[in-house]
Image (cartoon, rainbow over all chains, first blue to last red; front, side, top):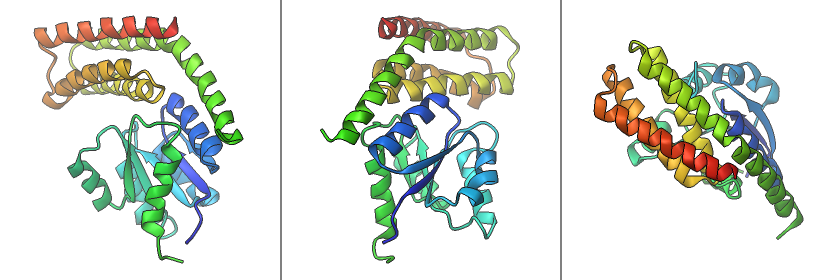
Length: 131
Length: 114
């Protein structure tokens, strides 16, 4: 199974960025690159080449689902796995985010001490048996 | 606890302390935005900006461990969302409820900041 190391986080709220960085780097041991908007993520994703994109749903300008749509429209970025983060985690909304190509959904607010485990669990569910 | 986890706990504790100290200002900014929204003629842009601001505080407060503040802010967020969805100003009862929400948020923020 491919190892999860590099995460591109797309989140516009600086307070959430700060706590997520500790949660993913210091707790989870991942390397994290932070983007503050969907547009910035689209501009930087190829250069950073993450194993996974962790993306807020509700952002000003280009929101999470619209950013994913643009990622999928470009063959060079279509394959990046995306996990959404949102306060709206009713089952039909989780299904909707999966239907548009998300790997899964992590609920906000999140526990900083378990965020990395939640991310890794979704990653492993997708990558089990993929060598 | 392992060393990395302990280090992370310390970093998180420092971050939480700073966030708590800043909370009264954060709530004041939300209150200012809500006041501007309620005072002006209804516009989608202003309503959405207000919605986003209270939504951000609701999310961050919960993540930083201030659950009651996060839940209270979420109530305010839902009120403003109603206005956003109906494309109409909030009614009198909703304005009163929002005022109560903001008052509670200020109280909780002051308590968190110590």
